[in-house]
Length: 300
Figure: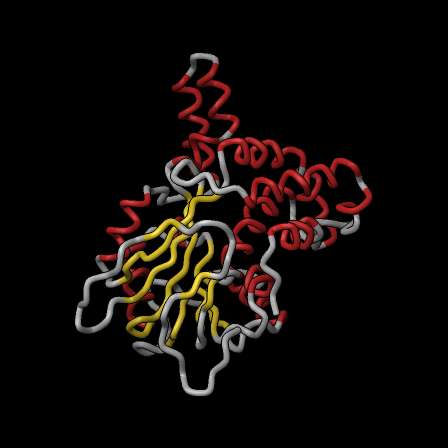
């Protein structure tokens, strides 16, 4: 059984990854862990398996990623029944092979986005759930390095900082909810629920924490670990303060004024029935999408 509270995920992430990554991933983990995703389940862009291990109680049926080193790490973790080096634009699975697909903060990094979404729809069964998270147009605008120049009457400098940050983050798509809804609907994936996460204040901390966490780059290079003292989140006052702040930012719901979007979709049935109205997810309770289950398969 996976816990779903943000405080739990903040504590776990601060023990293993830098603060800026913990801020985003803890908020996402609480959202993903709260969705009922029937198996078989595919993780598109599984990376090293760290996130999948956080949010699923049982092994995920399949994961794919373009990075061979990260796929090897995911394989060693044992959280996936099978992992493969593959492109999202050419998934190595038959049609309708999965009851659910998840993809956490991956789609914004993929230039052939329409092909990837088409492939996700192809391998998903009618009525199956697709759950993803993506940055919104607010991502660059909310960064502290973009906010301060605007406040000083230098909007061009703020925009330049935002473009630079998106470029180094390899963000090809930071689109609005309406754009994502239309893009998903074009491949038969109907948006049924969404939630914004991380406010402007949260993104100020996100931006600053890159500099606070700079030493973790060195420890990762020298020792293969981001965090050398995991218990600092309990005993080091700055980390304890940060943990409380991360929980606050992860739990708040900024609605449309958010840097990121969490999207829950359902694959349109073969008869082309009209999708139900899209709802804004309130709170952090469990989200259920009526999805087809394979015989005898339990929910993870």
